[in-house]
Image (cartoon, rainbow, N blue to C red):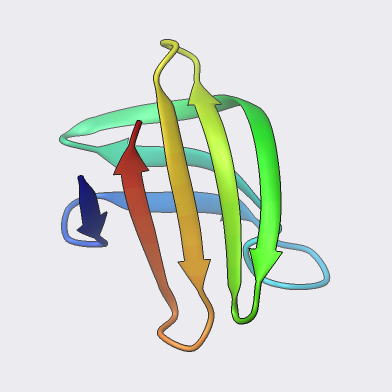
Length: 75
């Protein structure tokens, strides 16, 4: 299931560019800290992350640069 921003959102660390590393997500009313980035990849105009939260759940997070939006999928 993929949800766009709505009440779900991504917090990230930014340095040289925006969205260098997600640090937490707000998902279905819960604030979940990310404990591990399992993988990351880039496609044209998009940064993707497979992240594990402290409670053991896995999410795919995608930042779409042109739309300035995060897409969140619970895996």
